[in-house]
Length: 352
Ligand SMILES: NC(=O)c1ccc[n+]([C@@H]2O[C@H](COP(=O)([O-])OP(=O)(O)OC[C@H]3O[C@@H](n4cnc5c(N)ncnc54)[C@H](OP(=O)(O)O)[C@@H]3O)[C@@H](O)[C@H]2O)c1
Image (cartoon, rainbow, N blue to C red; front, top):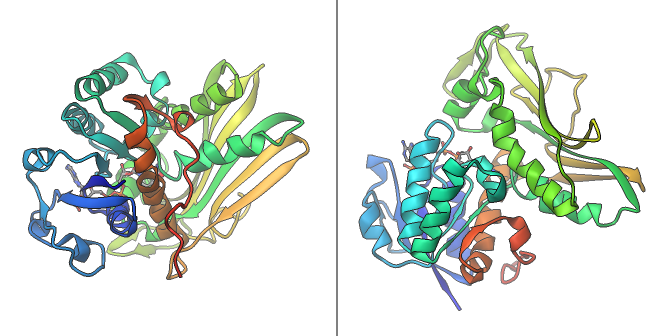
């Protein structure tokens, strides 16, 4: 069976998603939505560096939804427009299309959403007999399926720590880097992601999802962070970061059980590999630690065809969504998490 798919936006993750949809034997691309005026009318193949496929991008959402596609892959930016994104998601679900998305991090665990977010989405799923699955590489696979599968090998475990160690210098998302994470800003300014409750909102879903799977009740979710300034002027693409401004960020979001962190998501994000050498370092990717008996540590490293690990992370966010589409279309309607889906494998993707 082939599922008819609309790709919604063609940015960093979106272009990778488009490529993955076009290559997937169980998926058929039927439409592409774009926010950019200069991409309207451009062929989908061209928008992801492939040969033309005869489907032009459009900004007409109603016409796209009228195509009656099985699924929309929604990867439009949501970091500074979460409410608008939620409205889009609700509209798509109520139109009858299933939905996969990486846009709003908290949606990875619908059960722990506040009612103001959960209920309109659940109602839209009922109206459209549709399903929503939110994921990505992290929040998503690296902080749910991967550590949960490893935990199943334990005799006894005390702490599961998921560490993201990435250099975001090549991540072409200036809004996220500078306006949300506050890189290039003075250290006495608190960026939105470090306002009290923001890390908990974004990563609490991952911790609650793991807690649900592990049969744990989290007493609280704590936030910890530290920043390190750049030592010299840094030039990233068209952006210049003055020396002494924020150049590296480490944070932890901790799920507390019996007064101690039991589940931890830690991000070590540098714009320059030389910064904060005292923090964890690595080739770029995720590291999972399971403290207990036996102690387990897994390195999950990746790079794209050009050897760039940050780009490969975006690609993995896209493939996690796209490869889940058949399972999401076949699932009961409603708000899904990774715990509701069967094992998503590389079925049909073998190639040389
Ligand atoms: N969980 C994960 O693993 C993961 C990983 C990476 C990213 N993300 C999240 O996924 C989202 C996309 O990330 P990205 O790096 O792909 O972002 P991006 O490239 O900056 O933006 C995605 C696209 O959103 C569209 N867009 C821009 N402004 C818009 C607006 N005002 N209204 C509607 N659409 C608009 C544009 O599409 P067109 O170019 O087609 O106009 C843009 O290219 C973000 O919210 C990010 O936080 C999650």
